[in-house]
Image 1 (cartoon, one colour):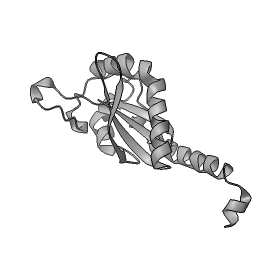
Image 2 (tube, rainbow, N blue to C red; image 1 turned 30 degrees about the horizontal axis):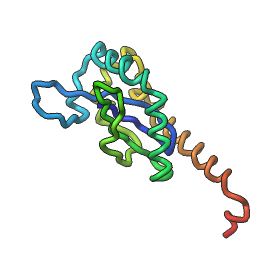
Image 3 (cartoon, rainbow, N blue to C red; image 1 turned 60 degrees about the vertical axis):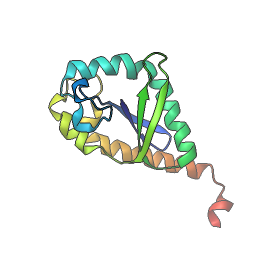
Length: 145
């Protein structure tokens, strides 16, 4: 399962989340993800990187419905077709539990920006960019109302 963290229409980061098959439950939570850089990197390189344009498009389309906000989009990649299915969208600024769970892998993952303190700062920067873009599309006359 993938979790795309987005600010408005912009995808900030994509996390790989998984649970051991032995668990017998398809529901995946942050702390179910095995703490292993090789497994995480394998899924990231084979699923996330090739699907990044589609993931970014999903983030944009969801924002077109919900508007500006901090989102977490849970995405299930369909194995046979590669189709991406959005199973849940929530409002979330930072996924600190996931970060804490995988912090020991910092520097070992193909994409680990979510493990740094830079992640929340980048979220705030993207939020400001989204507001500037939104205000740029509003005429001064509309703002005066």
